[in-house]
Image 1: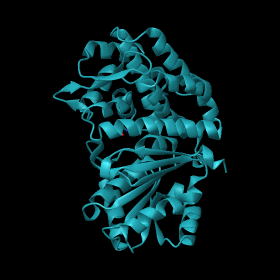
Image 2 (image 1 turned 135 degrees about the vertical axis):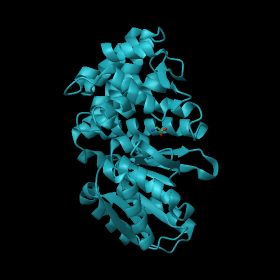
Image 3 (image 1 turned 90 degrees about the vertical axis):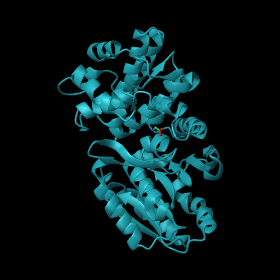
Length: 375
Ligand code: GLY
Protein backbone atom coordinates (compact mmCIF):
# COMPACT_ATOMS: atom_id res chain seq x y z
CA UNK A 1 0.00 0.00 0.00
CA UNK A 2 1.27 3.48 -0.80
CA UNK A 3 1.99 6.34 1.53
CA UNK A 4 -1.43 7.58 2.73
CA UNK A 5 -0.11 11.15 2.62
CA UNK A 6 -0.28 10.96 -1.18
CA UNK A 7 -4.04 10.34 -0.94
CA UNK A 8 -6.28 13.26 -1.84
CA UNK A 9 -9.70 14.50 -0.83
CA UNK A 10 -11.66 16.71 -3.21
CA UNK A 11 -14.87 18.44 -2.21
CA UNK A 12 -17.77 18.88 -4.60
CA UNK A 13 -19.27 22.17 -3.40
CA UNK A 14 -23.00 21.65 -3.85
CA UNK A 15 -24.37 23.10 -0.61
CA UNK A 16 -26.55 20.58 1.20
CA UNK A 17 -25.69 17.99 -1.47
CA UNK A 18 -21.92 18.54 -1.11
CA UNK A 19 -19.71 15.45 -0.86
CA UNK A 20 -16.10 14.35 -0.92
CA UNK A 21 -14.20 12.38 -3.51
CA UNK A 22 -11.39 10.36 -1.94
CA UNK A 23 -8.59 9.40 -4.32
CA UNK A 24 -5.68 7.19 -3.35
CA UNK A 25 -3.98 3.83 -3.42
CA UNK A 26 -5.39 1.11 -1.16
CA UNK A 27 -8.48 3.13 -0.22
CA UNK A 28 -10.82 0.13 -0.45
CA UNK A 29 -9.28 -1.08 2.82
CA UNK A 30 -10.52 2.16 4.40
CA UNK A 31 -14.07 1.89 2.99
CA UNK A 32 -15.67 1.06 6.37
CA UNK A 33 -14.00 4.03 8.07
CA UNK A 34 -15.08 6.35 5.21
CA UNK A 35 -18.66 5.04 5.03
CA UNK A 36 -19.41 4.76 8.76
CA UNK A 37 -20.04 8.47 9.38
CA UNK A 38 -22.67 8.44 6.61
CA UNK A 39 -24.36 5.38 8.12
CA UNK A 40 -24.51 6.76 11.64
CA UNK A 41 -25.69 10.14 10.32
CA UNK A 42 -28.59 8.44 8.47
CA UNK A 43 -29.65 6.41 11.57
CA UNK A 44 -30.70 3.59 9.24
CA UNK A 45 -30.82 0.16 10.85
CA UNK A 46 -31.40 -1.72 7.59
CA UNK A 47 -28.87 -3.69 5.56
CA UNK A 48 -26.40 -1.92 3.28
CA UNK A 49 -26.68 -3.27 -0.29
CA UNK A 50 -23.49 -3.46 -2.34
CA UNK A 51 -24.45 -3.50 -6.02
CA UNK A 52 -21.87 -4.84 -8.42
CA UNK A 53 -21.47 -6.94 -11.56
CA UNK A 54 -20.30 -10.52 -11.83
CA UNK A 55 -16.81 -9.58 -13.12
CA UNK A 56 -16.11 -7.04 -10.39
CA UNK A 57 -17.67 -9.37 -7.80
CA UNK A 58 -15.05 -12.02 -8.58
CA UNK A 59 -12.19 -9.67 -7.77
CA UNK A 60 -13.22 -6.90 -5.38
CA UNK A 61 -16.43 -7.97 -3.64
CA UNK A 62 -15.09 -10.55 -1.11
CA UNK A 63 -12.51 -8.22 0.50
CA UNK A 64 -15.05 -5.37 0.65
CA UNK A 65 -17.78 -7.52 2.26
CA UNK A 66 -15.23 -8.91 4.67
CA UNK A 67 -13.99 -5.57 5.89
CA UNK A 68 -17.49 -4.04 6.09
CA UNK A 69 -18.65 -7.09 8.07
CA UNK A 70 -15.72 -6.77 10.47
CA UNK A 71 -16.71 -3.15 11.02
CA UNK A 72 -20.23 -4.25 12.03
CA UNK A 73 -21.87 -3.11 8.77
CA UNK A 74 -24.57 -5.49 7.50
CA UNK A 75 -23.43 -5.35 3.85
CA UNK A 76 -25.37 -7.55 1.40
CA UNK A 77 -24.30 -8.10 -2.21
CA UNK A 78 -26.52 -7.73 -5.27
CA UNK A 79 -24.66 -9.11 -8.27
CA UNK A 80 -25.89 -7.99 -11.68
CA UNK A 81 -24.95 -9.25 -15.17
CA UNK A 82 -21.96 -7.35 -16.57
CA UNK A 83 -22.19 -5.03 -19.57
CA UNK A 84 -24.24 -2.20 -21.03
CA UNK A 85 -27.26 -4.52 -21.44
CA UNK A 86 -27.84 -4.27 -17.66
CA UNK A 87 -28.33 -0.47 -17.91
CA UNK A 88 -31.88 -1.13 -19.07
CA UNK A 89 -35.48 -1.18 -17.82
CA UNK A 90 -35.02 -4.91 -17.21
CA UNK A 91 -31.85 -4.27 -15.17
CA UNK A 92 -33.60 -1.50 -13.23
CA UNK A 93 -36.55 -3.77 -12.47
CA UNK A 94 -34.26 -6.53 -11.23
CA UNK A 95 -32.17 -4.19 -9.11
CA UNK A 96 -35.04 -2.24 -7.57
CA UNK A 97 -36.81 -5.53 -6.83
CA UNK A 98 -33.71 -6.84 -5.06
CA UNK A 99 -33.37 -3.60 -3.07
CA UNK A 100 -37.03 -3.70 -2.01
CA UNK A 101 -36.77 -7.40 -1.11
CA UNK A 102 -33.87 -6.44 1.14
CA UNK A 103 -36.21 -3.97 2.84
CA UNK A 104 -33.82 -1.10 2.42
CA UNK A 105 -35.30 1.80 4.34
CA UNK A 106 -35.76 5.40 3.24
CA UNK A 107 -32.69 6.48 5.24
CA UNK A 108 -30.54 3.69 3.90
CA UNK A 109 -27.35 3.82 1.87
CA UNK A 110 -26.76 1.84 -1.34
CA UNK A 111 -23.19 1.21 -2.47
CA UNK A 112 -22.29 1.02 -6.18
CA UNK A 113 -19.11 -0.99 -6.74
CA UNK A 114 -17.93 -1.15 -10.36
CA UNK A 115 -17.56 0.82 -13.57
CA UNK A 116 -19.86 3.29 -15.28
CA UNK A 117 -22.68 0.81 -15.89
CA UNK A 118 -22.97 -0.14 -12.21
CA UNK A 119 -22.62 3.48 -11.05
CA UNK A 120 -25.20 4.84 -13.51
CA UNK A 121 -27.74 2.07 -12.88
CA UNK A 122 -27.33 1.99 -9.10
CA UNK A 123 -27.44 5.78 -8.85
CA UNK A 124 -30.64 5.85 -10.88
CA UNK A 125 -32.26 3.02 -8.87
CA UNK A 126 -31.28 4.77 -5.62
CA UNK A 127 -32.64 8.06 -6.99
CA UNK A 128 -36.10 6.68 -7.65
CA UNK A 129 -36.35 4.06 -4.89
CA UNK A 130 -38.78 5.35 -2.26
CA UNK A 131 -38.38 8.76 -3.94
CA UNK A 132 -34.65 8.79 -3.32
CA UNK A 133 -32.21 7.02 -1.05
CA UNK A 134 -28.56 7.91 -0.55
CA UNK A 135 -25.81 6.13 -2.46
CA UNK A 136 -22.05 5.83 -2.44
CA UNK A 137 -19.80 5.32 -5.44
CA UNK A 138 -16.81 2.98 -5.33
CA UNK A 139 -15.63 3.19 -8.96
CA UNK A 140 -13.33 0.42 -10.16
CA UNK A 141 -12.40 1.62 -13.67
CA UNK A 142 -10.36 4.65 -14.69
CA UNK A 143 -13.28 5.98 -16.72
CA UNK A 144 -15.66 5.83 -13.78
CA UNK A 145 -13.07 7.23 -11.35
CA UNK A 146 -12.44 10.36 -13.42
CA UNK A 147 -15.87 10.87 -14.95
CA UNK A 148 -19.05 8.89 -14.39
CA UNK A 149 -18.87 8.44 -10.58
CA UNK A 150 -18.60 12.21 -10.06
CA UNK A 151 -21.32 14.75 -10.70
CA UNK A 152 -24.55 12.86 -10.15
CA UNK A 153 -25.57 11.97 -13.72
CA UNK A 154 -27.40 8.63 -13.45
CA UNK A 155 -29.33 6.82 -16.17
CA UNK A 156 -30.39 3.72 -18.00
CA UNK A 157 -30.56 3.32 -21.77
CA UNK A 158 -33.74 3.34 -23.86
CA UNK A 159 -34.42 1.67 -27.20
CA UNK A 160 -34.08 5.17 -28.70
CA UNK A 161 -30.59 5.82 -27.32
CA UNK A 162 -28.12 5.68 -24.47
CA UNK A 163 -28.68 7.44 -21.12
CA UNK A 164 -32.06 8.81 -22.17
CA UNK A 165 -33.90 7.81 -18.97
CA UNK A 166 -32.19 9.28 -15.95
CA UNK A 167 -31.89 11.89 -13.26
CA UNK A 168 -29.36 13.97 -11.41
CA UNK A 169 -28.76 12.23 -8.09
CA UNK A 170 -25.50 13.09 -6.37
CA UNK A 171 -23.65 10.38 -4.45
CA UNK A 172 -22.87 11.00 -0.76
CA UNK A 173 -19.23 9.99 -1.23
CA UNK A 174 -16.90 8.74 -3.96
CA UNK A 175 -14.08 6.37 -3.01
CA UNK A 176 -11.63 6.04 -5.92
CA UNK A 177 -8.97 3.46 -5.07
CA UNK A 178 -6.33 3.71 -7.79
CA UNK A 179 -4.87 0.30 -6.80
CA UNK A 180 -8.00 -1.32 -8.28
CA UNK A 181 -6.95 -0.09 -11.73
CA UNK A 182 -4.10 -2.64 -11.77
CA UNK A 183 -6.58 -5.42 -12.64
CA UNK A 184 -8.01 -3.61 -15.69
CA UNK A 185 -7.24 -4.82 -19.22
CA UNK A 186 -4.96 -2.35 -21.04
CA UNK A 187 -7.66 -1.35 -23.53
CA UNK A 188 -10.09 -0.47 -20.73
CA UNK A 189 -7.42 1.54 -18.89
CA UNK A 190 -6.58 3.48 -22.07
CA UNK A 191 -10.25 4.11 -22.72
CA UNK A 192 -10.47 5.82 -19.32
CA UNK A 193 -7.28 7.74 -20.02
CA UNK A 194 -9.03 9.47 -22.94
CA UNK A 195 -11.23 11.19 -20.34
CA UNK A 196 -8.14 12.22 -18.35
CA UNK A 197 -6.58 13.80 -21.48
CA UNK A 198 -9.96 15.51 -22.02
CA UNK A 199 -9.52 17.60 -18.85
CA UNK A 200 -6.17 18.93 -20.06
CA UNK A 201 -7.60 19.69 -23.50
CA UNK A 202 -10.73 21.41 -22.28
CA UNK A 203 -9.38 23.61 -19.53
CA UNK A 204 -5.81 23.16 -18.33
CA UNK A 205 -2.83 23.32 -20.69
CA UNK A 206 -0.41 22.88 -17.75
CA UNK A 207 -2.11 19.62 -16.81
CA UNK A 208 -1.87 18.52 -20.45
CA UNK A 209 1.85 19.30 -20.42
CA UNK A 210 2.16 17.24 -17.22
CA UNK A 211 0.34 14.36 -18.94
CA UNK A 212 2.72 14.53 -21.91
CA UNK A 213 5.54 13.79 -19.44
CA UNK A 214 3.75 11.55 -16.93
CA UNK A 215 0.67 10.03 -18.63
CA UNK A 216 2.47 6.96 -19.96
CA UNK A 217 4.05 6.42 -16.51
CA UNK A 218 0.63 6.54 -14.85
CA UNK A 219 -0.68 4.00 -17.35
CA UNK A 220 2.34 1.76 -16.75
CA UNK A 221 1.54 1.51 -13.03
CA UNK A 222 3.30 4.49 -11.41
CA UNK A 223 0.98 4.92 -8.43
CA UNK A 224 1.83 8.53 -7.56
CA UNK A 225 1.38 9.61 -11.19
CA UNK A 226 -1.98 7.82 -11.40
CA UNK A 227 -3.22 9.37 -8.14
CA UNK A 228 -2.30 12.82 -9.46
CA UNK A 229 -3.97 12.14 -12.85
CA UNK A 230 -7.20 10.92 -11.21
CA UNK A 231 -7.28 13.56 -8.47
CA UNK A 232 -6.63 16.46 -10.85
CA UNK A 233 -9.32 15.20 -13.24
CA UNK A 234 -11.80 14.87 -10.34
CA UNK A 235 -10.91 18.34 -9.07
CA UNK A 236 -11.60 19.84 -12.51
CA UNK A 237 -14.89 17.97 -12.79
CA UNK A 238 -15.89 18.93 -9.24
CA UNK A 239 -15.26 22.62 -10.02
CA UNK A 240 -17.35 22.47 -13.19
CA UNK A 241 -20.20 20.53 -11.53
CA UNK A 242 -20.25 22.94 -8.58
CA UNK A 243 -20.86 25.87 -10.92
CA UNK A 244 -23.25 24.13 -13.34
CA UNK A 245 -24.73 20.99 -11.81
CA UNK A 246 -27.55 20.56 -14.34
CA UNK A 247 -25.62 21.39 -17.51
CA UNK A 248 -27.17 24.69 -18.45
CA UNK A 249 -23.75 26.07 -19.40
CA UNK A 250 -20.15 25.13 -18.60
CA UNK A 251 -20.81 21.48 -17.75
CA UNK A 252 -21.26 20.85 -21.46
CA UNK A 253 -17.48 21.36 -21.79
CA UNK A 254 -17.17 17.85 -20.30
CA UNK A 255 -18.74 16.61 -23.53
CA UNK A 256 -15.63 17.55 -25.54
CA UNK A 257 -15.27 14.88 -28.24
CA UNK A 258 -18.54 13.22 -27.27
CA UNK A 259 -20.78 14.39 -30.14
CA UNK A 260 -18.33 12.92 -32.67
CA UNK A 261 -17.52 10.01 -30.35
CA UNK A 262 -21.14 8.91 -29.81
CA UNK A 263 -21.78 9.07 -33.56
CA UNK A 264 -18.76 6.84 -34.18
CA UNK A 265 -19.90 4.42 -31.46
CA UNK A 266 -23.40 4.30 -32.99
CA UNK A 267 -22.02 3.79 -36.52
CA UNK A 268 -19.91 0.88 -35.29
CA UNK A 269 -22.92 -0.63 -33.50
CA UNK A 270 -21.62 0.03 -29.94
CA UNK A 271 -19.42 -3.00 -30.55
CA UNK A 272 -15.94 -4.12 -29.70
CA UNK A 273 -14.71 -2.21 -32.77
CA UNK A 274 -14.76 0.98 -30.73
CA UNK A 275 -15.12 1.28 -26.95
CA UNK A 276 -16.43 4.51 -25.42
CA UNK A 277 -13.09 6.13 -24.52
CA UNK A 278 -11.67 5.34 -27.96
CA UNK A 279 -14.68 7.09 -29.52
CA UNK A 280 -14.06 10.07 -27.24
CA UNK A 281 -10.35 10.10 -28.16
CA UNK A 282 -11.07 10.19 -31.90
CA UNK A 283 -13.94 12.62 -31.23
CA UNK A 284 -11.62 15.05 -29.43
CA UNK A 285 -9.05 14.83 -32.23
CA UNK A 286 -11.90 15.64 -34.68
CA UNK A 287 -13.04 18.56 -32.50
CA UNK A 288 -9.49 19.96 -32.68
CA UNK A 289 -9.41 19.49 -36.47
CA UNK A 290 -12.78 21.18 -36.87
CA UNK A 291 -11.55 24.07 -34.72
CA UNK A 292 -8.45 24.42 -36.92
CA UNK A 293 -10.59 24.30 -40.07
CA UNK A 294 -12.78 27.10 -38.71
CA UNK A 295 -9.69 29.21 -37.99
CA UNK A 296 -10.22 29.04 -34.22
CA UNK A 297 -7.28 26.94 -33.06
CA UNK A 298 -3.60 26.82 -34.05
CA UNK A 299 -2.80 23.69 -36.11
CA UNK A 300 0.15 22.92 -33.85
CA UNK A 301 -2.15 22.53 -30.80
CA UNK A 302 -4.29 20.00 -32.70
CA UNK A 303 -1.16 18.11 -33.78
CA UNK A 304 0.23 18.14 -30.25
CA UNK A 305 -3.01 16.73 -28.85
CA UNK A 306 -3.20 14.00 -31.49
CA UNK A 307 0.49 13.14 -30.96
CA UNK A 308 -0.14 12.53 -27.26
CA UNK A 309 -3.13 10.25 -27.90
CA UNK A 310 -1.02 8.19 -30.30
CA UNK A 311 1.96 8.15 -27.93
CA UNK A 312 -0.07 6.44 -25.19
CA UNK A 313 -1.69 4.05 -27.68
CA UNK A 314 -5.11 5.62 -28.24
CA UNK A 315 -6.73 5.95 -31.68
CA UNK A 316 -6.78 9.52 -33.01
CA UNK A 317 -8.44 9.35 -36.45
CA UNK A 318 -11.35 7.58 -38.14
CA UNK A 319 -9.10 5.15 -40.11
CA UNK A 320 -7.74 3.88 -36.75
CA UNK A 321 -11.09 2.07 -36.31
CA UNK A 322 -10.92 -1.53 -37.54
CA UNK A 323 -13.27 -2.52 -40.36
CA UNK A 324 -15.15 -0.45 -42.94
CA UNK A 325 -14.92 3.34 -42.60
CA UNK A 326 -18.14 4.89 -41.20
CA UNK A 327 -19.82 7.11 -43.79
CA UNK A 328 -19.81 10.89 -43.11
CA UNK A 329 -23.54 11.34 -43.81
CA UNK A 330 -24.42 8.41 -41.56
CA UNK A 331 -22.31 9.97 -38.80
CA UNK A 332 -24.07 13.31 -39.19
CA UNK A 333 -27.40 11.44 -39.03
CA UNK A 334 -26.36 9.90 -35.70
CA UNK A 335 -25.30 13.31 -34.38
CA UNK A 336 -28.76 14.68 -35.15
CA UNK A 337 -30.25 12.03 -32.81
CA UNK A 338 -27.88 12.80 -29.97
CA UNK A 339 -29.47 14.31 -26.86
CA UNK A 340 -27.11 17.27 -27.23
CA UNK A 341 -29.35 18.54 -30.05
CA UNK A 342 -31.58 21.51 -29.15
CA UNK A 343 -33.85 23.37 -31.58
CA UNK A 344 -32.49 21.20 -34.39
CA UNK A 345 -28.95 22.56 -33.97
CA UNK A 346 -25.90 20.50 -33.13
CA UNK A 347 -23.99 21.52 -30.05
CA UNK A 348 -20.23 21.21 -30.38
CA UNK A 349 -17.41 21.78 -27.97
CA UNK A 350 -14.65 23.48 -29.94
CA UNK A 351 -11.26 24.86 -28.96
CA UNK A 352 -9.42 28.14 -29.23
CA UNK A 353 -6.30 26.17 -28.32
CA UNK A 354 -5.09 23.51 -25.90
CA UNK A 355 -6.87 24.05 -22.59
CA UNK A 356 -9.37 26.53 -24.09
CA UNK A 357 -12.62 24.77 -24.96
CA UNK A 358 -15.95 26.52 -25.44
CA UNK A 359 -19.52 25.52 -26.28
CA UNK A 360 -21.04 26.56 -29.60
CA UNK A 361 -24.16 25.88 -31.62
CA UNK A 362 -22.96 27.81 -34.59
CA UNK A 363 -21.02 25.29 -36.68
CA UNK A 364 -21.48 25.01 -40.46
CA UNK A 365 -22.47 21.46 -41.36
CA UNK A 366 -20.22 21.55 -44.46
CA UNK A 367 -17.14 21.98 -42.22
CA UNK A 368 -18.28 19.07 -40.02
CA UNK A 369 -18.74 16.92 -43.10
CA UNK A 370 -15.35 17.72 -44.54
CA UNK A 371 -13.62 16.92 -41.25
CA UNK A 372 -15.47 13.58 -41.17
CA UNK A 373 -14.41 12.88 -44.74
CA UNK A 374 -10.76 13.99 -44.47
CA UNK A 375 -9.75 12.79 -41.02
N1 GLY B 1 -19.83 12.88 -18.32
C1 GLY B 1 -20.16 14.24 -18.48
C2 GLY B 1 -20.81 14.86 -17.29
O1 GLY B 1 -20.83 14.26 -16.23
O2 GLY B 1 -21.34 15.93 -17.40
